[in-house]
Amino acid sequence: MTTAVVRVLLADDEPLFRGTVSRLVDATPGMAVAGEAGTGRAAVALAAARRPDVVVMDVRMPDLDGIAATARITAVADPPRVLVLTAFDLDDHVYRALRAGASGFVFKDITPPRLVNAIRTVAAGESLLAPSVTRRLIAGHVPRRAPRRRLDGVTPREHEVLALVTRGLSNDEIEATLHISRGTLKTHIGSLLAKLAARDRAQLVIAGYEAGLADP
Image 1 (cartoon, rainbow, N blue to C red):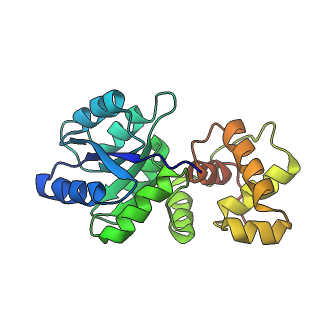
Image 2 (image 1 turned 45 degrees about the horizontal axis):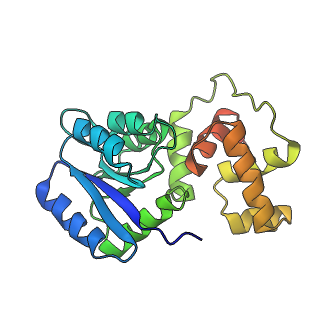
């Protein structure tokens, strides 16, 4: 396991909030601030120049909103992970952010310890969405009568894994259901990410819904 410092870019138009998070990140062992941006365009430029591991992005940004900025930041090769900040429980914002390439979202009133854990989670390549929230978001935004997504090249076992991921099961629950090891599960998930051109687990959930795997 790498011991490299997680470099964090902070994108928020509120200087006071940005400064508070900046001090929190710099005071956390294993983390460092890679830069601060007060607009969406500045965030895109800094992400390209500084190559952070994680971008903490406010949804409501001037000049270029956080969702559009996220799409640009994640469109490059080997992009940073994006953790979206939102002040409101708005499903449309969160869903659009996930479609744009975000790895998860947190509310702006999150406690400092939980924000640190959230940054670590997305830095490690995991998505940050509670299963119940994920189901609600995707079910509310993926049209049920839309053409089904094809799962070309996906093996029967990978299909089973994707179905369980789509339904919000944790790794432990999937391992118990399919009687497989953690290593085997990681291999299947890695293969699914590659075959479905998905950035992370949240993107796999979207693919699963589009393929109809959440249907009863």
